[in-house]
Length: 118
Image (cartoon, rainbow, N blue to C red):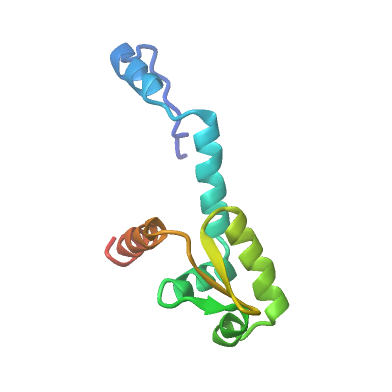
């Protein structure tokens, strides 16, 4: 029978515990990180982000690239914009989307390294 992976030790390393507690992220930052990964955890939004990592695109362009309706793409862009993953700029009647900053590309690159070379 397999044992549970629960620590049943009585003694703790107070130094380590205090160090970790002192360096713990505030709950607000934990919530923001969770939301970031929740937003990135959707296949459609990830496809949008990878497309925008290559080119600035309008909703129509994204709809063709992703083989989706403009309405569906717009819905996902709204979520990405709310989490500051994408930004938009208006040119005449067209609205163009791009990644908010290079941090998103860095996160994706690191994640790809993790999944490909692990």
